[in-house]
Image 1 (cartoon, rainbow, N blue to C red):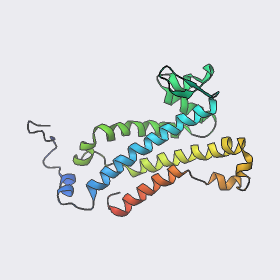
Image 2 (image 1 turned 45 degrees about the vertical axis):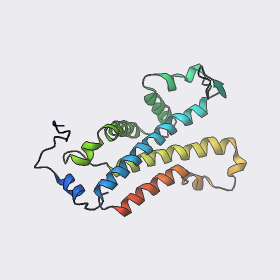
Image 3 (image 1 turned 90 degrees about the horizontal axis):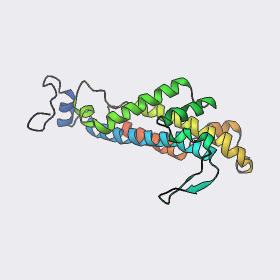
Image 4 (image 1 turned 180 degrees about the horizontal axis):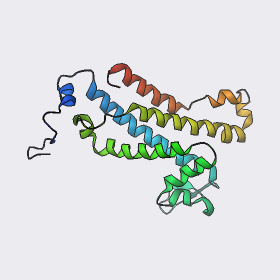
Length: 199
């Protein structure tokens, strides 16, 4: 920024700014909406990657030093949640089970890095013509991976531990199912698409 507090973007490159000032095609609103959806989808996916594993490996619950109830994880699996690169360990566990691929793992790190850009450099995304606008395909790919994890969980954990609850559904029907959170996030993206011409 200069002394006036305004961002130092090249004067010859103001396409995004003009779209905002002229209120063309709902660009600004769509970018703010997509920023929120991107951050929300990442947090939901990151939570699913971790929380499903906590539920799977936990031997019940215990109270920590702060008086909070937390999963009681056996020592042989605690590294999944306490190491410096817990996310990597968690993804490797999902990969070992055949739920995610190496391409998925690479993509997760791409999404995490861009999540940091969205969270800390939104001004640049919105105003700098050289910065990539928020990619909807990232969000939809995150939803695809979340759907894979949710569907695996339904088939291999919930239905396996309580088969009577799912006896009226075939494996194919359950495999095609989506959790409510996936449906809601997809609905948000569809709504942004309908209201703007920029995504």
